[in-house]
Structure formats: C-alpha cells, structure tokens
Amino acid sequence: MDPIYEDEDVRVLGSRFASSRTVVTFSSLNEHERPFGKDFLDRHEVSGVYFVAKWNHWWQPEGCRAGAEAARRYLEVLKPEGVMTYGSSMGGFGAALHSRRLGAETVLMLAPQFSVDPAKPPHETRWKAEASRLRFLQDDLAAEISLTARKIVVYDPMTPDEAQAELFAALPGTELFKTPSAGHAIGHFLLQTKLLQDLVLTALEGRLSWADYRAQVRERRSVSGNYWHQLGRAAQLRRHGYALELLARGAALRPKDVAIQTDYGNALLRAKAYEEALAVFQHAAELVPEAPAPLRGLSLAHRGLGRMQESVVAAEAAVSRRPGSADLQRVLVNALVAAGELERALEVVTATVAAEPGNAENARLRDRILEKLPGPQDIRAAS
Image (cartoon, rainbow, N blue to C red; front, side):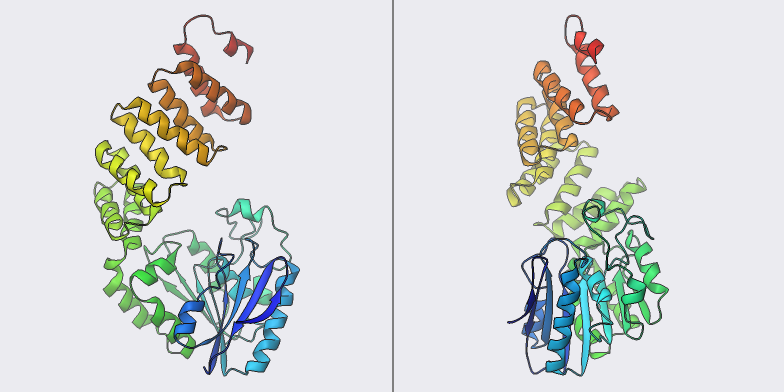
C-alpha cells in the first residue's frame, strides 16, 4: 500500500496494479480502519485509491480536500484511462463530493446522501447526532460533483433514501437504479444476491445496464435475507398478518445478523409467542453479547412467560450496556414492578425522571408505582 496522505481526520492509501482503470473509494459510517472495497479490487487486480475517515465526518474537515489533492497527484502518476469514485452511504457522499476534483468519469454510489445537514433539503434526520458535531464547510454537492461523469445511484425507493436520490436526479448524467426492499444497507443485499461484483466491474468498464441490473435483481432477490426482512417490516407497518412469516424467512436466511434476528424476536413478542421469542433473543445475545437490544427482548420474553426474576436480570444487563437509555430504564422498571420490587422500581424511575424531566411517559410510570406503594405519597406531592 502506498501512503498518499494522512492527518487526524482522514487517511488516503493507494494500491497499484496493471489495470487500465482506477477506483477511488470512500469509507462508510463507522468504518475507520478498513479501506472500502480494497479486498475485492485487489482480487481483481484493479488499482485503487482509498479514503478512510477516522470518524463520521462526511468528508467535511479541511484535510479531506488536501487528501483529494494528494490523491489527484497520485492519479497523475498512475495515468489511468479512466477513474471511478465509489462508496456507500457516507462513502457515497464522498464519492460524489470529490468526483470532479479527481476527474471521475463514473460515480457509483450505494444509498448516498446529497446532504446530511438537517437545515438543508432533504432535511435528513437519520444521522442528526453525527450532523450536530459537524461544521458543514464542504457540502455544496451541486457545485462540487462532476457534471460530466456518469452518476449511478443504487438505492431502495421504499426508504428515506428516496428523498436523497431525487436531489441527485436533478443533476445531468444521473441514473437511478431503484432496488425495492433492499434497505439502506444495500451493499448487504448486493452481496447476498451475488450482484455486487458485476455491478462494480461493469460500472467501471462502462457496460452497466439498468435493464440487465433490474432483471438480475428480480431473478436473485429471493435469496436475500435483507429483502425478506424489509418486506416484513413494510408489512408490519400496514399490519398485514403475513409480516411475521416474512420476517421469519429473513431471519432464517440471515442467522448471524443481530438486527434482523432482533426484529424477528420483537415481532414474536407482539404475537405473544414468548417461547419462540426467547429462543431468538438468546441466539442474538450469544452473537453479540455487548448489544443491549437482544437483552431487552429477553427481559420482555421472560416477563411474558411469568419469569419475573429472569426478566429483571436481563433488563439489568441491557441497562449496563447502555446506561443512558430511557427506554431500557423503563424496561427495567416494568420488570421490577412485575417482580414486586416496587421500592427499587421507584428508585430507578425517580432517577430517570430527574435525568429527563420533560418525559411524560417516565412521570406517568413513576405515578403508577406510587399508587401501588402503601402509605401517604409525599414524594408525588413534593414533585
């Protein structure tokens, strides 16, 4: 690997092969070590330049522009016949942002953002916490993106990514590759359906066809657990009775995906299938012991089965993983109430109310506990 540029915000690396074209990739959210797509490009002996964000900054720090300038000089030495920028989500934004500066003839973006600034269209809120830590100094995508490059946006139109894609569509040379029920993590869908390799290589070679891609998606999507999971979530919103069956199919195809397993477990809870839910959450907790969501589900499943002490233990474990979560605190309080530990439940909920004084749900839960306790309720009067 050739070191190209590095500062406290970004690292840029290069790898050289005898390929006629070069791919410049940008890392995704929470991927701060591994260069995006490097293993794949190395296997196919394609030269690459890799931007790795050291935190979730959407390529806003000044150093990112310096890194792009260093990468441009590196490409001048390589002299490729063509350059493609490529990334997913936050990486897709980076691929677009630096496409003109890097001389890209193709920009391949998986579920990208046009902007994550909540103050700007499409007023994105999914990454509001991350956006609150950013100074948006380099987010005028309409000014920075290459207007001459072929811009390919691969996304699920059933998600909020649709609003982002519509802004890209206003730019010349943009093609929307709509992929329903693939989800925001569309790279997982493409890997599961064995479409990712063809997508990247044909885009790089200028042979990617929307008609061929759509036909392949329709032919292969049934093998994707993410596809069935997304269908199940959509069916849940519409209260369709077959939602549980769809989620079960997704979980069967993705047995090691904690998020999919947890969603399936929660659906089983809603169906009052507590024994089945317990087994699903136990499996999910074994996959990622530090994750609070499966432990939350375990607490609710135990409570549904009347195992109150086990419910309290699981809830305590969930809270220990994420102490600041009001939702997990409420799960613990309800478990303690069900176990008859009212005084301890009051202690926990009182602290939660103090931490979130504006949360009416916490206050109502505290008042219900006070009503169950014997004797005069001076605490409520004082509050």
